[in-house]
Structure formats: structure tokens, C-alpha cells
Length: 304
Ligand SMILES: Cc1cc2nc3c(=O)[nH]c(=O)nc-3n(C[C@H](O)[C@H](O)[C@H](O)COP(=O)(O)O)c2cc1C
Image 1 (cartoon, protein in one colour):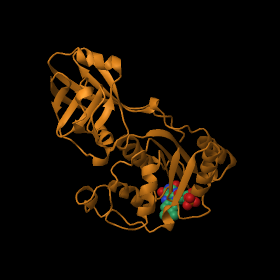
Image 2 (cartoon, rainbow, N blue to C red):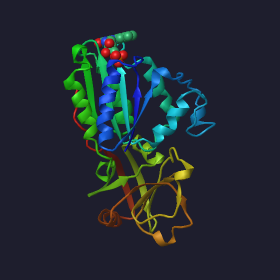
Image 3 (cartoon, rainbow, N blue to C red):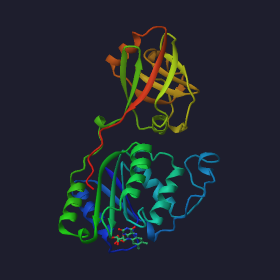
Image 4 (cartoon, rainbow, N blue to C red):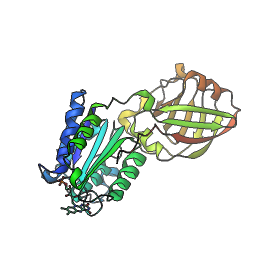
């Protein structure tokens, strides 16, 4: 898989860089493609909060600085590694600026996994950086945790530490279907799970859970009124497959049938039900209430 590493240390031969190099060596030995950005050598300004990216443009930042080199790589990457020295109990300022600028993309298109690498002088100084990582990357971006690696004082550059980082890189596997987030749909006694896809709309939708919606069976689908959310027109499609879940034009729809006559409809598919679960939906009454929630992929252990 493609891995993007954001290095927040300004020291070219520093402790953070040593951890990144060990990780990179391991990951590349397993066939992964690793791109490291040394953020402190780049011209990356702080977010202006001008909202250009979400109003006048779509996923484009108004500031044409070195962040423009990072955006396309971040959109292609399936894993992100945040690596930083601990400064005043948080990430380095330069790295935090780059993180804030991810705002323009909303949800990087293919990201599924994340890792945090921290170097510090003292022990027990990681809560601030870990809070950012857990809340902004694991929870908000719905990424799978591939571990938190820390080194304090003499642990930095130690043989044991660098061996662990190398092994962490070498043991990574490509994201697979088993890791896809599931949309849990409950109505009365019926519970089904739809596999969410990688679309921008699906990522945005995940952050709106849990929700309750009401729908009426039209003969081919349960149509429920719901705000559309963020859509990338390029990801919309004509037609659907039976079992698809649609979110567009103010509708959340469970499209259990009607695939043959669907070509004329242009919509955003965010998830899909397998045949068995699709049949369960068809057993529901004409009017049904759906409780929608999210089942997250398994999150790995904490190596801190
Ligand atoms: C501005 C600054 C703030 C720092 N704040 C902390 C801190 O709050 N806690 C800590 O344990 N170490 C702190 N340190 C020490 C660094 O985290 C530590 O030396 C780290 O290993 C440097 O990583 P590097 O070699 O990759 O730059 C700070 C260092 C600097 C320069």
C-alpha cells in the first residue's frame, strides 16, 4: 500500500527521523511504498479558516504553498504516519500546521490506517499528542490504529526501539475488505449490516451516526428523508445494484430491488447489503423506522 509519513521534527538526524527510517526500511521490505515529507523543510502555513475549500472550491486550498505537494500524495495514500518530537506536551507546531491544512480535503480519499511515532526527553508526556491522534485521525477520519510508538530519553535511537519500528513496518498488510466499516441498520427485530465504501460521502456520513430515519416502501426501496451531506460529483453514478444504499438529493434509500430500471437515476452509493441482509429488509412492513449506527473496524493495540 501507499504510506504517507509526515515528519514534524526539524532535526535531519534527530530521534524522530531515526524512528521513521527504521519504519520505512521495514515497510519497504514488505513491498509498501513510503513517501516521507520533512514538514519543517517545507513552506507550510497555518490554516486561514477562510472556508474557500468548502464554499468557493471543492477540496482545494486557497493557499498555494508546499501543502500542494502533500495533498495529491495524501489522497493516494492508504496509511498515514504522524511522526513528531514532543514539544510542550504536543506535536511540533510545524506538524500541527500541516495537520490543520488537511481540513481542505475533508477526508483524504483512500486513507484507512494510521500510526503515531513520538520522541521526547521525558517519559509520560504523550497524552496531548495521543489525544489529537485518537480524536482527529482514528475517530474523525475513521482510521484503523496500527500502533503508537514512543521513545523517551535514552530509549531514543536504541537498538530495541529501531528494531520494533522496523518490524512494525514489515508486518503491515494492505487494507482488505474485512476492515471496511459497516453501517448497522436496525428496524424492529431486523438488524442488517451494510459494507461502507471508500467514497467521500460515505466518510462524511460516518460522522453523522447514530441517526434515526423513517421510510416508506416504494416497491423497490425504502425512501427516507435525510440531508444529503458532502458529495463529490465525480463519485456519483447512474443506476444501482440491488442492496445498494443511496445518499443523495435529500434521500437516504435502501435500494433492495429495481436494479433493472435504475439506469435513469443519478445518485451516490455509500454502502451495500449482501443478498441475505437485503432479503431481511424486504420482510419489513410498508412503513418502517431505521436506527442507523456504525460498526468500526477492529482497532489494534497501543504500543506506547
Ligand atoms: C521546543 C521544544 C519543546 C520540547 N518540549 C518537550 C516536552 O514538553 N516534553 C519532553 O519530554 N520533551 C520535550 N522536548 C524535547 C524533545 O521532545 C526531544 O529532545 C526529542 O527527542 C527531539 O526529537 P528530534 O530529535 O526528532 O527533534 C522539547 C524540545 C524542544 C526543542
